[in-house]
Image (cartoon, rainbow, N blue to C red; front, side, top):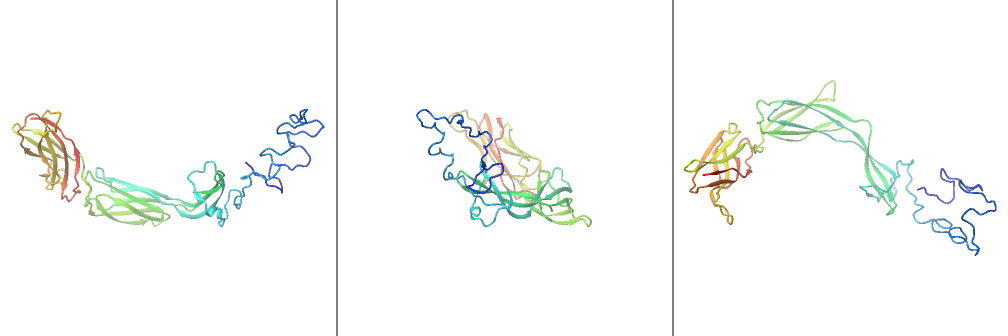
Length: 350
């Protein structure tokens, strides 16, 4: 709603009273306008004048809140003065619903960081990858709003694109993949960033520690090649689904059967198993007895191979089941040695 101040020229679109009636009004012709006739008692009708004006009809001091003088921008909606205490004490707003826009303060101009992610898998390891990064140049603004509800100013952050953005077409080359191969279950991730003209590797995670250099094309600085060289091995988690365990009856006893998908890659290393096998005694009121138990503190130790078996004795007849099991690659030079929980296993009748 527009605000009318006393005195001065009228706001655009408004007219001064020069004796002419405003549109929709009638000149005095001696006859009262409809609704302004007085009753026979001589008292005016409600709202027809003749006494104190009704609230909101003027005739005195303006009502509170109708004459707010906001900070004056350079031009409507433009930059605001930087030394106005009303703005310096403003709070951050996360919603401007119902507020009035006042203007803004100019902030600094800077380059936004652009990031690109490269994922590399041991199932299909490449030696050459490409990424395109664009670093936008923007000017930071602080937009100010006025809340009539609590008579306070608020600001929200904003930014405006300006000229001078930077872009780089990045080619990533892995130098020594033959000497430092990825195993089929391994994966790597590299995050590159561009801020203005500054290109860097933000982070890397994978099977090796890499060192790298950036080289720009002599004729076109937007074309850059990153040469990455694999160094020391990083012990990453083993393939959680690479090992399976089951129990089988042998007639006189029972056995564990271990199948290791990557037994050749881990040949000669130690595979440790923690497992609990129980006998179903048919009772509904007590827990089934344990037939054999290996713990993480005292595990079943096997030499890694494609298939390994280990016998255990049981005098019970009937259903046996593998209640839970887990494994780890103990003291491995390829993977980390943390335990991998595999949950429940199979059951068999002995």
